[in-house]
Image (cartoon, rainbow, N blue to C red):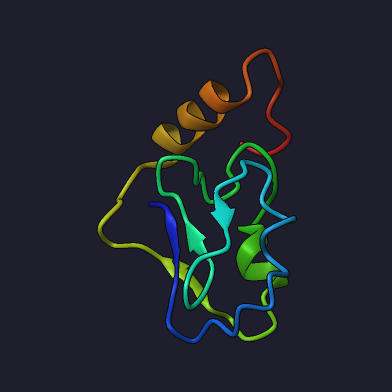
Length: 88
């Protein structure tokens, strides 16, 4: 499932540059994750980088966008054609 930013976000922006899929952008009042680009970092990292880098733990799984690990990996491959996933 994709991640979302909860209302705990302090809009520090630390997660934006860490997203390997370009899924996170500035929003109002806090940053936003585009679920169509979020792979929970499957294919790129061992854990979701937004969650790892957030100083207050604002990112959380989004129950409205449930996907299997296989679906997340397929999405990553579509976003990064020709590249080999680092983490599966």
